[in-house]
Length: 335
Image (cartoon, rainbow, N blue to C red):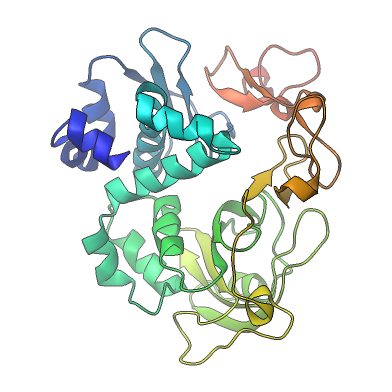
């Protein structure tokens, strides 16, 4: 995506770093509009991409956080690149579960525009990210909390996750490597490191044994965890071994790394659009014979019709769970 950007729009990446909204507004063949905050769309950020319009439209919600708005605009512009370049589109068509790949690629694209490698190198050392290094990256004022989490997760040296949580301990954003990420909105307040952070708003806390609690009720393997506060939210860095803040932290018996070299499932992980559970996608997980989609642990697939709908009120694509039965507008717009 970055190579396509530099090939077709030389120096645009520099303008996108300075002011993504203004830079996109100056382009031909795409428009960008700001709308009022309206809940969670299908993407990991508050926005949407209307490819069905002419010209295509990027929708960004007005937010009190300028960095979040910048990340959203870049994420949605990433969708525009993916869906209008034949080579990029071909990668998505050929890849299993291209929608998940596209979302993840747009997150990384946005974070790399806002946080170039040189800047990340200054704050995250070779041993890997810490909660404090994520905070330091955010303090540069260049990017949103989510973008900083994405860039930090790229530097994990072992299986783990970087998670952004509300003050109540609920997941706002998560990116992982080699383990199941916690679902957005899931309650992690009982996690040892998150609970410690909630009780110490001015400190950085560490726990050598903490877990992710999944929405299914299951728990992850024991993880090393460090957490701190970042502009009203909690950021937690979790790792199966070798976290950036400890000199010696081997994987524990029973973890995937202890038993064998860590490797993500061939098909990666998916999030069910019906129940929001996170599950491994593989041939052995079971696919629906009718729609071909993988089934989550509760048996949901594409046949449940849990697809995104366009809300005419806010012009965002939202999950069907955001609408009351029979309603045209989402719950937020209907209020």
